[in-house]
Length: 146
Image 1 (cartoon, rainbow, N blue to C red):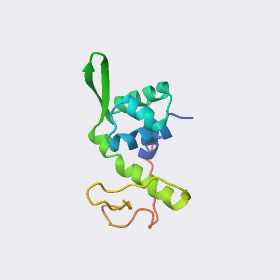
Image 2: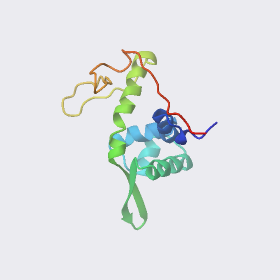
Image 3: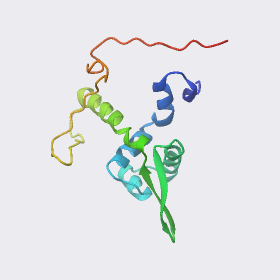
Image 4: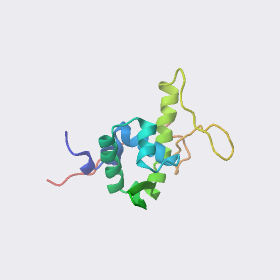
């Protein structure tokens, strides 16, 4: 498989970074306020080595920032960057799709903390105002020299 991070498609480049379930769930939890390794591990029931690797990648790629909160013993927390905060609508778009096609039984629900209303996300094209997915799309791939 080709290295997706070098593809002209921004979807492919983004999936190269956060395309696995663990990275997405870490970003979900970080957007709810979790910052510490043990908090992520408890929430996700993820193996420590897997969590360490995912946190390192998300930090290296600028979605999280590692900050020292204790010198003795040395302990770090992982704080969202602007890029990490900007990822939240992506997670909600995936959740909205899941609500339509993968729901059934008990599911996690998300509420606006200030109003108490359940979040019902819609992705809108800024230029046309149309909900994404309601109009045909066309993909233009840049020509490659060769």
